[in-house]
Length: 396
Ligand code: ADP
Ligand code: MG
Image (cartoon, rainbow, N blue to C red):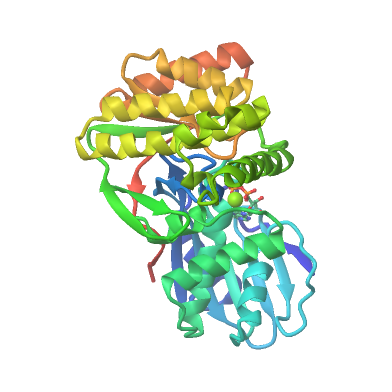
């Protein structure tokens, strides 16, 4: 059953107090649990997760706040950003997916199938992560709700459980074949660090990121990733085709992670040019990751930035997942004197570019890129300066 609340006006920046107050206004009682769940960026390691490779994400200071409380005979879920309420009964809720409710039903469904008892609950959630911009608002919402239910109903879930349940919800219910990086970053991140995640073993470690000397600024191309699902599946298939070729020659290669550049070049004649280029990108990205980690350890952000730019060129030319607007943003950013590095971020065909800018030049950069985008495309672009924060936290 759908009902719309008009008690809210336009929402731009969300404070957790607003969500708490909304909960109080709507349900006449305070929420019992409030969780803050951040969005994430990925510094390096694009399209490597499904090749068993490494990624380097971090949570950011844009988040979703989820406020929850127990309820007797029905569940009322309120999306603050959409000004909409969905009412249902957990015992009988319909398994259809609709809009934002899929993310909630998806996690409830996974919890129920794990044998967890989930009674009805009321919830208000909302935040300032731009939706569909590649900053993982969906993962933030899923992990935020699971963490909230974990606290509310003493489900005894570990952080890793929360990550894995969120991934399953998105894969099985929402129907997006995403990897585990988004959820992992949004639960396990640490302030002022980037998180190195091995997508095969799920081993992870932290690398210091000097937020005081270098700033991260995201430019939203404004293009929505329409092609992303079909093209994403095609890229995954090319990688699997490449692995099959390499494996037929060298059985120890079971994913592109296991292949070296030498392997690829040795068997180049067995590849068609497109499959070769896709595999080339992935293997180069894994080499770049090692170099980038070395640069971070040496505080060498100049080299780190150059590697980001090389990643962009690989994504544009060999993996072919960029688009004109992203290329424009990256080329313009690279022409700004205090840009250390720039690249498209995420699956591709839209979303944001990520830019590493020398501290002190943030405003000048934003002015520069905004003007360039406006004069080329005739419309304003959204720009987000972001800081690296801790992962998901219970804040009340
Ligand atoms: P991304 O994860 O890159 O932001 P997705 O398309 O995976 O993009 O997820 C965006 C969807 O997640 C939205 O369209 C909406 O259904 C849901 N969602 C995320 N955050 C919120 C929110 N604050 N309020 C309502 N729905 C949300
Ligand atoms: Mg998402």
